[in-house]
Image (cartoon, rainbow, N blue to C red):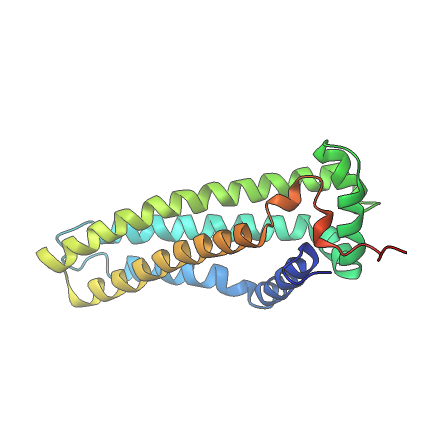
Length: 205
């Protein structure tokens, strides 16, 4: 297996997933904290609707956390089977002589029904849509942050607003960086056929 191949990417993904599963509570704790702080500081003076931004951002973050949790629960059998034999899964995927994604997924992990992939895929699509909305919301937050700096706001509200706008912006940057890294490594190309170059074939006799 060549470094940077699909199996190497799976190994990196497993490491990230293990960390996410260990600290899953943080995905819910942060938006709950954000909502609580927005309620606490809602009566303080502020010239821009920073509190409204914080409350919607908390709801958005809870939505992302919920879809991630649901997709994780749905795709747990897939994760376990991939964890047991990632190399074999890569070989079965690349050996499947069909362009039908449903058949390729069924060939990828025998015993996993197509409905599992479909349900998990719907949750992933929902999460992606919320992340896209979060990108737009980060831009709105940056504009309101300029308003806070120019027009003024209570110090406590301004500080909390700054922290969560930075967190939202950091999330967007991290997602974009991860997508760019996957694209550079050819992970998206692996979804198509004819990528046996990632696996070194047997040496010619």
